[in-house]
Length: 80
Image (cartoon, rainbow, N blue to C red):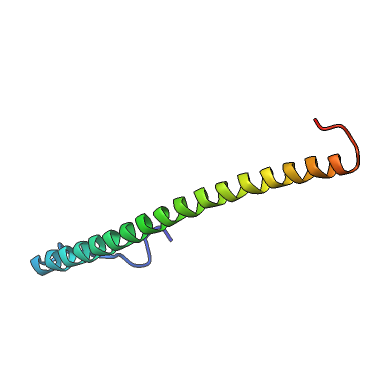
């Protein structure tokens, strides 16, 4: 068969369809604004947590180094 089985005829949308599209755009814009605000809050929280994590990591490394140093002094090894 060379002819398509069915042909879709699409007419020009009536003017009220523009109003529907405008409402959809407004709804999507409001959702986008809400999601952007949520993302901003999450990023702020993430930065705060990340810097807190870095500080804890530095402290743990320092304590481990001090502990290793003090253990080596107790065993009589020379201190580095």
